[in-house]
Length: 468
Ligand code: SAH
Image (cartoon, rainbow, N blue to C red):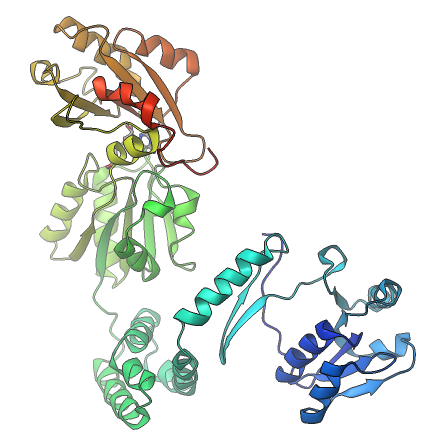
């Protein structure tokens, strides 16, 4: 993060602009709207500033800039067409320890101005740190069209009840639920359609109900959410929505930063990663944690790589939850086989190659692979092996010793759908050696079957993982 976004309270505070063109007028307009005590220093006022002066008050001074002009200013703006004037302002500001913004010159700025979507008191500030003004304009246009003016009304309404609700509902979790229901429920709907009286009546009813409920913590719930194999764009809308309304999140090493960053900022994060042969937190411990947290009234998010029910032990977790009468929701995710296949350009089924596709685990139990080889070597099918990297040798040998053709195409996809995705192509005979040569690491998925050969034709069209 190159800049810290903050919102300044400039009400009654001194600010200064040097310059008199369009840029000066735009800044002046914003500073006046924010209630600041503004001074403009310029030889004369340009057309836009003169227009602004007809409706608003600000101080204007045509004499040359001196250190006294910056006295008590909290921020200052260099908008002059003359670089020397802006430079002089920079130097004076540096001496006085005041932050300066110079128009169209990010390098000379202590702070930059974002694009603004104004639904006061709701404000959205957008910035690309100067790297893509076009993208910023595009996003601003999108927000302008998708955020109704009524959101400002809703924010104002909520603000007017803040103190009362804080006193009435001291329990933080319950209070947050109250707000969540408010902004997505019927009170908001009435406000959006300008039915203020109805909104107020409903609000009073809800406050009454809240005071009857007392300060008991609300009922907890667990969300078992599949996040897909890594690319955050593969999340479902439902996953994203639940990720926004959670109090605590349990995640493991399959969950990347890109996805964790989409979880509500102030949700508590608990890492329950299992490192191979070094089980940090056991499955029972994880289930117990989910139960404990839900019993404390928390909304608990359990993130699962891929899909929770595909080699994800999601079944065990919900069994434990239902044994304890805890409410839960399961959100499916794109499983690694689907994600990796799409991003590697390998269709899992194809009329000319495979009419069936099986997902199996290559994880050894007690040092043994327990697979039904007869069913895996059937013709015209694709076999996808999860967790098979460390037993790759045993896997390829298993296929071969049960009669599979050594020339059967096979691929390994490492870090599928993520930055740094790698695809190794070979055959049942050559795969082990190629994987060793390339130093393939976990997470990696193995695909066996003639569909692998289609990659040559199709990979060019396949989705590109980020950074590929
Ligand atoms: N529930 C998950 C699977 C968990 S088992 C799902 O539906 O995808 C963990 C195995 O999944 C890993 O050993 C690996 O074989 C596979 N896997 C998960 N994410 C992957 C990725 N981004 N790239 C390649 N393989 C992945």
